[in-house]
Length: 352
Ligand code: ATP
Ligand code: MG
Image (cartoon, rainbow, N blue to C red; front, side):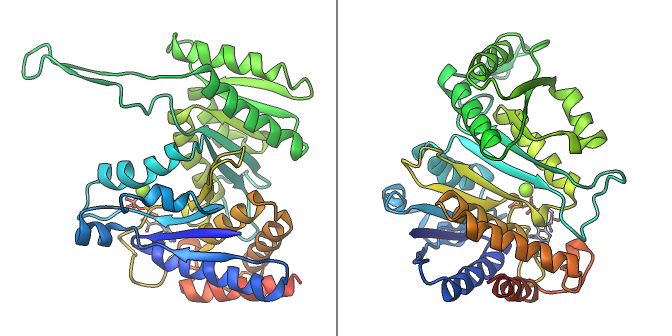
């Protein structure tokens, strides 16, 4: 398999180093794992040098790869709309990565901020290419008293059907019985009502699965009150974005949560990245938690058919956390990024 690696900015570079060491460890142990990685320095540093986040033919270069492992991007010298709209968004759109996949799972040794919450294990499927995040709209009557802004939400039947199918296929594959849909059709009466209709119609094709539909305001409360109840959650771009960050907070940390931008048909490469950003406040100190990045590597391998190796990595992470000897600062310890990476590599070896 060919993997394009984009470490990016800040702690992205630091945590990526550890993920690549885990990959090397796997390659030493697993003879039939042949991985070809290429590292691309498409970062804010590169932007400062060249005026571009990625080269003109960046997308066509990436299209030659089976998957992309991404670190994090963000730098105070570069506006957010440049880093997002000139690197991340073009990749998501070009490669039709319409699923944003976020596992939310309790880990041993990690205390949830919620006192009554352990055994949390669900996955969020966020629509990743349309919906509320559109560039349709604008401002009218500039500098007049009646000045206003319009932001259009564009939802397509195909878009909704695709994300629901991806969520349902996952639910069946992993033996789950319910799919929860986030809606707000009592107030957002055009697009959200359409969302509800398309979700219900598509769910009819999955008679084994039960659909629960909750208003987003109630759903965020349930995420806090009884997160154990959920199995698979499907949501629009905006609602999914909010639920995903809440999901990582609920299990106890941004430094732990992985994500995938997935093209389920595998026509195009999918991209896997930690939920956290470049964390400029701790960058360069070697103290970032590499678990989210390493777990993202695990998701990548699973997506490319190596669910056995995905399991090995997740088990290794769980073993290290359960032993509790090596912990980075964000989860209450004093270990460095490198120490955490090395501990996970050792645990990977013990799984063979
Ligand atoms: P960006 O603009 O790139 O999103 P940010 O300033 O929003 O960066 P995040 O990376 O989203 O920062 O992180 C938010 C907070 O969580 C920061 O205080 C950061 O230090 C902490 N944090 C994020 N990732 C990690 C990690 N892997 N290990 C430890 N702490 C982390
Ligand atoms: Mg951030």
